[in-house]
Length: 150
Image 1 (tube, rainbow, N blue to C red):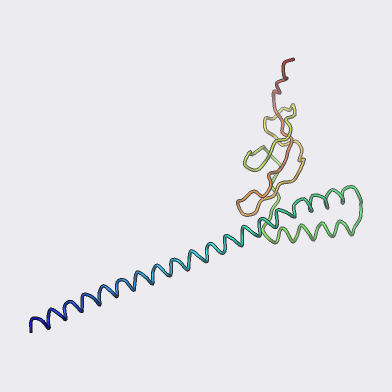
Image 2 (cartoon, helix red, strand yellow; image 1 turned 120 degrees about the vertical axis):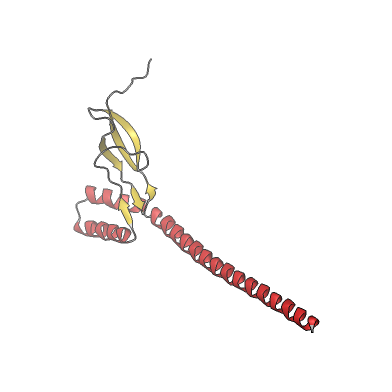
């Protein structure tokens, strides 16, 4: 009789251990599935960003051509191209204000009254979400410009 109860107790303990292992395995599998989905989304986002970044010089060229050649067809193409990029979440970096090193790249410092004010945009910058695709290249005012000694 004691053996039967001991056997039952051992069997019950084994069943409990197996149930615990099964629950852990199912939780680990669910976590793995979630991580794989997150990684897949990140990979797709990275590929999209990489592709969209390659189109930025094209939009620069279209804007330059539109400014040089006053042509309605060219303007419409540029507008449509910008709409497509913007529909994918790309936005122009704001350049009406003051220099921000995380969004702007200063290509020239010009003597001015207000320190750090953006005076001119040399090349537009773009962001997607909180990621900078390309910093805006700008000319910035500087209250004192030191001249190199000769």
